[in-house]
Amino acid sequence: MTTMPVLDTTEFDFSQEHALGADKVARRVAVVRNENAQAVLHVGMKSPVPWLDLYPSEFALAPSEAQTVVVELRPERAGHTALAPARVSLFGQYLAVQAADAAALPADVEMGIAVIPPLSNCPHCAADLPEGATECRRCGERIRLCPVCGTPNTWLARACRLNPAHILRTQADWRMAPGGDAGHALASERPLGAHLARRWSFPTSAPTRAADTLEWSAPLAAFGMVVASAIDSAAGRATIYAFALATGAALWDFDLPDGRGLYPDRGAMALSEDGMLYAATLGGSVLAMDVIRGTRRWEAKVGGTVYGGVTVADDYLLVPAGTDLVVLDRRDGRPMRTLPVGGQLDTASAAWGGGVFVGSDDHHLRAFDLATGAEVWATETDGPFDAAPLVRDGVVYAATMTGTVWALESATGAVRWRTSVSSRALSVSPALSFDGLLYVAGDDGFLHIVAASTGNLIRSRRVSASPLRCAPAVGGHTVFAGADDGNLYSLDAEYNVLRAYETTPGTRLGTAGLALYGDFLICAATNGVLYVLQATA
Ligand SMILES: [Zn+2]
Ligand SMILES: [Zn+2]
Image (cartoon, rainbow, N blue to C red; front, side, top):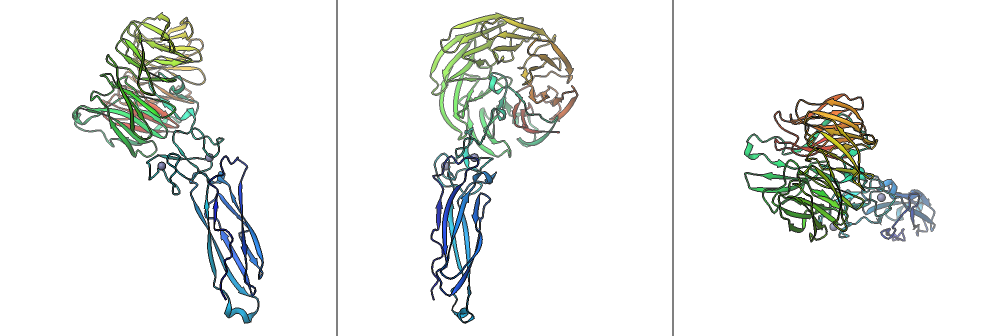
């Protein structure tokens, strides 16, 4: 007696089942047949993954009987496991109806159904991905699994490619410093604990020899990664480093075209939504890179020294160079126009609603129309600017080196209010919380809290005896500020000051801004170490 095939299908391909809704399932049917006329067939089959249902999963078939088995795909159940091809195994055992037939029973059956889930391939090169893959072995693409259904996506995607209702990335996980970009100001609604614990650092500990110390500029965090540039003076080299945020694993590094690198105090790179990274060196070399893959896209050169950070605005890249704001086409680096700002530019510009806002050493804030390059207004203030302006909902906020915070109408430059908060300089951009509070860090070691709507000084709280020259970051009602004594401080909703994290004594945190990503806070210190800290209660 021969064993007949018991299963009519050995492969189910769901790869074309796109856009499965939240409540929808994809179904396939297989038929299990007992083709033996003398024996009963007991069948058991088991789903190897949570996103596949089989029913019935166990049954008995009388001689010559058939049973329909339904295979249901439910990507929503995948959670954090990848949707990778799975194999359902089927096991069947024959039992004799008549004792006399026992000797002639067919052998046990073992078969499998291969299940190919939708979109289990690389979103970049379409190569098959194994379960839990974090990168593609063929093209090197970094893979982000959808937190709802497990579908592999690119890190740039905002929504899952299987079901756009699955959100992969929100504005809230993309905070950059210092200032410049209103959409990515250092304030998040998400409440953060007031303590900080180190997750990893690069290098692991501070070098003992000064010559080995890297000089960092402001770090960025987005797309699950931390990107920061550092000058290695001894080697005459400046390098951009990219790390996986959660683990600190090195993803790529790339030497800047100019060994002088980015100005440590106020230099900053910028990111765009489509995954381009921009950097401008002190010497005026501008570099655009694919941030996910670490590959160069284009290089350009601008005249004049670049002290401030670059800013992305729509299709433009804004580079502060000397006394000009140079506007490049951010797709290819082509020069578009040069905006004369009247004085030395020490900091990044801010863009909003088709306008760009610049503060310079000649005590003026100016607005330009990005499309035409025309100057829209110029308003005289009481001091020069090291802090980048911040713009939200039609109001430009700026802090001067003479201790005053200004709020101007973005359309006209009219002064809404001005508030003198300190006799000392305000060297860094304020953070503007979602509930309308400006947190202003001062060289006087105080955090000044100003109501953005009225300019009323709500509270000044002494944080450190040393200057605060690190743009503060806000999560909910917790504020973090770095000081020139090497410590990161937090201030909670009751204005309690806590020393949240200590680096090496004698180190300054003023050298670069903070970056915020979820509850991760990233900072660089003058001891040469880039710290990735996590806020805890
Ligand atoms: Zn690939
Ligand atoms: Zn999904």
